[in-house]
Image (cartoon, rainbow, N blue to C red; front, side, top):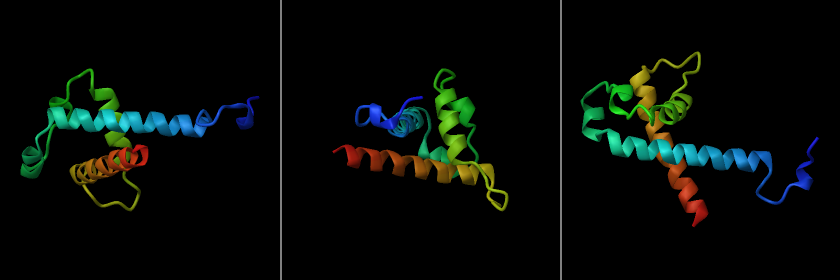
Length: 101
């Protein structure tokens, strides 16, 4: 069994998971920026999968669907949850960027 004290600083499983999550979030945000138009979001439902390049879809979908997951008492539509997920995604990436600076 690995002891967290045996690992170099910043190599703890939780720290590595956080870094992987930030990289996935940044990749998802970049995918969004390259493939989707904010005006299209304002106009109504967007076919996210149709708008995202198929080889970028798995990471984008994982991040957005994780952030947009509904709780049992959540009455928002999928589009409303995805819009909020995009806001959360932007906040995550901005916070990671400011922390790194």
